[in-house]
Length: 281
Length: 119
Image: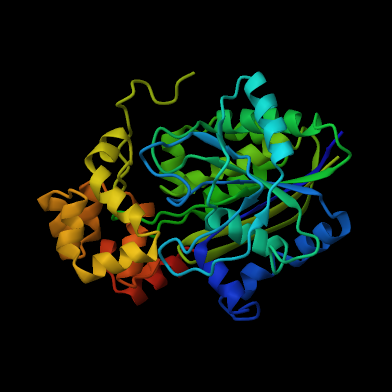
């Protein structure tokens, strides 16, 4: 059976992709952000997961408002990014894992989580930037695991509740661990933390709330399910709702996790940027 | 347990527009046009003749005016969703800090200072 090794969270800001492309690791603006990753690199290198479940939110590349799935899972042989309207570099495809994808979809639906399955899914910076952060040179990294993208809607309300996100993760964890292959799996939760791009409140960042989330997600995630969706918008900012991805990841890891590293820095672009590595018992 | 009693219920968060079904319907044409900008060929078509391109997607006058005047707050008011509008901002070569400043009455530099002040 497959085993979940742990989970890694990170913000997935497009500007990070540019900083990686330009190798700004020691630039004074970027250093406090990139300093959060060497321990993650070491862990990834030592553990060499075979599969990566990449939980992210699409930002208007893979899905439009004509058909907006609340939870979608990719089931493709490979995943390509696009320039997203900004001229981002188009990378070689990320290898998929359709057998694992369909196993997860079957298991989740049997577990009463109704999934939109995607045999084609262009992936945006929410998926790509974390891959580049954790597997330098991705997808051209010899340790690059095969990927299953999971996207949750945070574009259009109603978005899922925090409880639903955590429960989704629990069902996802059961699905992964019933996959009949001796395989190592890592789960990513990408996005957040607090930020707001639009309106007169643009630029809002909330260190206190982000730290509350960081302090509770490892050992007390149920506490965070008490946060209502509108409270999440109010305290994390309109785009800080991406924290749902972290909750989904957390649910998949089971009860006992060890926090191996944490980083938090304000600001990266308009965002309170957070990174967390949790290892399963 | 329902955390948003009644499907129409939202709390009022100053300076924040909840992009819900109502806004999604209002802004559909505008957002659909912006979604098309994922493709370079469509960005080129817009740059060549913005009026014809907006007409093709059926934008209403308020949406067209918001784009003509690069008024981000008006685009939001007319149902624009920031993730799709970001692709329009790309055509105008505006960074998210430029867009932040434009919405808050700050220069880009002032907006960056504001971000730093929350560290």
